[in-house]
Length: 88
Image (tube, one colour):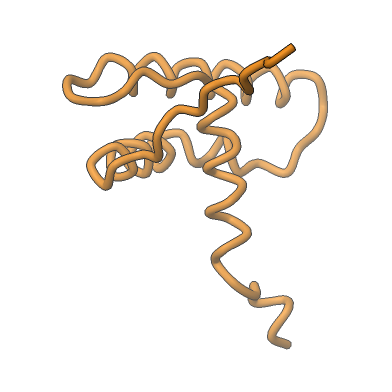
């Protein structure tokens, strides 16, 4: 049987990336927190949901889901290069 793989959505445009960067910056304190207690995890999930809702409310963007933002944020953090601790 020929089963087609699930269709992949297109890459984000530069406008969409700019919107995401601005939204992540506004939630930076919560999203970049290193705390792993239950309250912090709930706060992070809520912040990602708010970010997704705010992104999807912007005119001219493709509707995305929360997992897309988490993945993009992780890729951006990994692409920044060595941190201060790594250069010591």
